[in-house]
Length: 223
Image 1 (tube, rainbow, N blue to C red):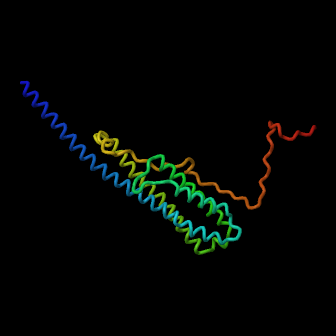
Image 2 (tube, one colour):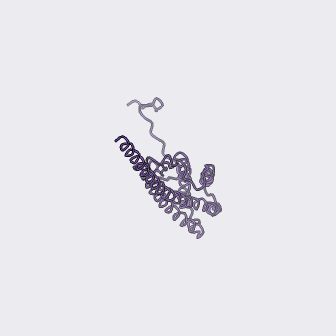
């Protein structure tokens, strides 16, 4: 009787090990597939962002020839572009959440500077009529659209992977097999609102009224 019980336990243990082993293999293969999809999406994200960076030298050369063009705008673009190059990303690997956020902040800074360049150009009729500038402007607009699309695809791929990592029985094997949660692109605060760009071309702002409660406010004449 005891031998039968012992044999039954061994069979049960062997069956459990077999099931877990098969489950582990299936989970591993699925995670490899999903991980490759995330890496491929990340490569596309890098490609479209790099395209934007590659457009900048020609764009800057085009606007530099305009008399009295705002140098501060070009300086902002140069500094923002340089800040991206200072962030070290591992080749063919999705960065961790902290690095991705740092990289995205730098990309957003560059995007903002380019947006200001486009806004400033509206005040230069010769620049607006320049065919080379029009072509670069169209390419930049198309690139910005591609950036939005590829970011969305990356987030979808990362979500599929992260969901699989958390599901049973994969959750039992994921960490042991070296699969960790992927970072997402996150919308910046106020990203849903259009940027407000205001430029002062020699117009002096009206002085702000003094607060009645302020000790610096001018005394009121006696009535």
